[in-house]
Image (cartoon, rainbow, N blue to C red; front, side, top):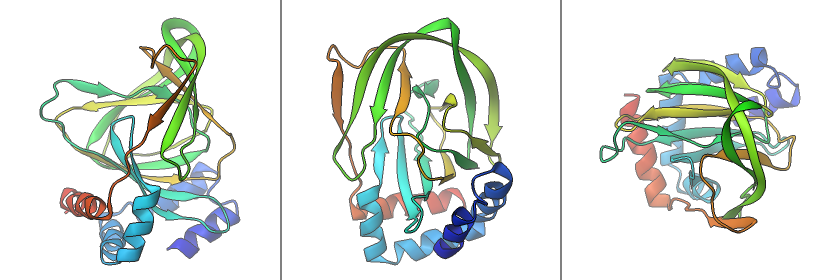
Length: 232
């Protein structure tokens, strides 16, 4: 599978929605996902490598890097949103762009997706997000305030596949009490940073360093085993 993805990205076939959609659609089929996750769970070395690349994201999900390219810096990621029964209503993540284009298949649950543009609208605190890489922290650099307005919104159910350009500002909202999961084919990065827009400031400093939490090998095995029950 890794060799196939390497060839797709190398040929340019993954750089358009038409090219990446067929790949992501096949990989997001329950049988394909179960086989891939099963092989990973059975391989201690693969789990350890994966745990070192994965982390609990500030937008309330576990970001698991299932596979990563050697020749091209693409990634196949699994995003897991746990039910949060102690929370009520809807959980909404920060509005953000990306450093790369990507194609997503929603494989469990549903969420409310929005895209935004800069223009007359609500006030947000603008930050420049610098990537984590293999380190232990990420940073947010204050850029002042900006106004944004929602240009698109839709409820996306399981089975939806969509493509987003790195420049698009977007966010998702989901029910606190329900699980959700998506499979993401991340293409090679074209930017050094992303833009983040928050309704509240991170802090008083111009630059804030935030430590990330990476799963242990045991935690990652448990997370993937739980995910298998979601697609059983």
